[in-house]
Each structure stands twice: as C-alpha cells, then as structure tokens.
Amino acid sequence: MLTANLEKQLRDFKLNIDLTVNPGEVLILLGTNGSGKSTVLNLLSGLLEPDDGEIVLNGHVVFNAKQKIFSPPEERNIGYVFQNYALFPHMSVFDNIAYGLKMRKIPKEQIVSQIQRTLEDLEIAHVRNERVTNLSGGQRQRVALARALIVQPHLLLLDEPLTALDPMAREKIRLELREQLVTSSHPAIMVTHSIKDAQIIGDRVIILEKGTVIWKGKPDELESGTSAPNLSHLKCECFEYRDFGGIAID
Image (cartoon, rainbow, N blue to C red; front, side, top):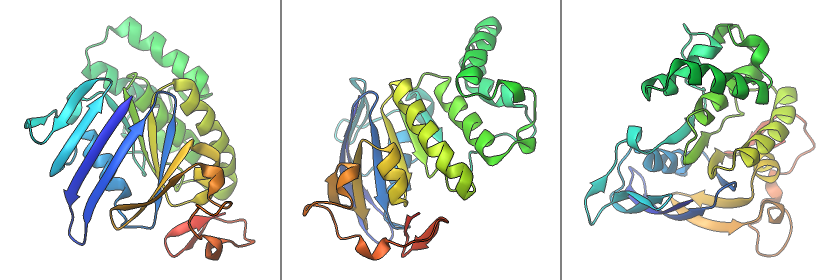
C-alpha cells in the first residue's frame, strides 16, 4: 500500500498532491502535457526529491521532509516502466528481464525459473533469446512490464506505456495490461493523457492541472455525472489515437 503527500516547486507552478493506492489497485494520473504527471512518478521513485511531504510504502517511510528521510531509488523496491521502455538494446529479452534480479544477487537457478514463469504469463516465452531490437512494440511493452514485475515491487509505476504502440496493438494491450496489473496484486500508478486508457485500465482517476488536483473519481464518471469535469470537447469519431489540447481520446 502507498500513501503519499508531495510538494515540489517546478519552473512554472507548484506541485501539490495526496495519494493513496491499495494493493491490486490501479490509479490513473490524467492530464495535459506538462501538468506534473511524470514528476509525481519521479518523486515517488526517488529520482527526484520532494520539497515537503511524506511517502510511506508498505508501512515503511521512504521519504519524510521533516525527519530528513530520503531512501534512494535502489532501496525502494519500485518497478518503473518508462514511456520508451528503457530496455537495453544490446541484450536479449531474458537478460533484460534478469537485470534487476542479478543486481539483487539472486541465485542463477532461481532467476531462470522466475523468468520462465513470467515469460509464460506474459506470452513472450518464444522470444526469450531475441534481442529487444527485433521485437514488435507490443512485445517490447511486455518485456518492460516483465522486468518491472520480476523484482516483486512494492509499487509499480507506468509512464505512458502505450504511446509507442500502433492503434491496433494499443486496443489489445490495454485489456492485457489491465489483467496483468490486477493479477500482480501490486499497487500501480499509470500516467496517461488518454481518456480511454483511464476507462479501461484504471480503478480510480486523478486529473492534474498545473500541479493541482482538479478532480478525483472513478473512470466511468469521466463521461457521466455532474461531478465529472467537462471533457465534451475531446470527443470525436476518429479511431486513431489523436491529441486534443494535450488530452487524448480514441
């Protein structure tokens, strides 16, 4: 479980957000480009240090400004799937996934068995020896997710993991990603600017605007109910992933 309250002065605005994410729950951070979504992930992961606040992960304080506690990223046990996946191009699928386990000095036999199960769960066992440069976008996305999940993280962070996929692959991967995140039982936070991503993958949604939370609710409330923000100007009949003022809808 994650609880956090974060403050960070950025160049154009001050970020201020409170978060709670339960095990097996997917929280979506939705907003225009530059609203502070990715910054939230970097603060939680330890890649950036908040100016004020606290981060508690599975009952362990990894950041507290007043107590001057700041655990570095390698001590937080957080899985991070970056927008471009950040895979090692010179390595095979197997070696990319094994990287985190090797850094933790896990025995080789255990590494092999853990990876094989993960490859089978994500249906990429047939490409285990391929270099990631030879894979499709959907396969790379699965490898990145496998690398993040294999270390059994206390928290999973995903920064727009579907934007590199073509429209047809995105439709399929959305459903698979939702199933994989729920099955993993880890709390997860996913950044996106796609309303459809939020509706299909998320359990709860927070909309950010210039570092401020302007709305919280359920994904199905985004287009219904009086409490939802007015997103009617985003609707269109197109089938490709399109951008409308920074927030996208398919």
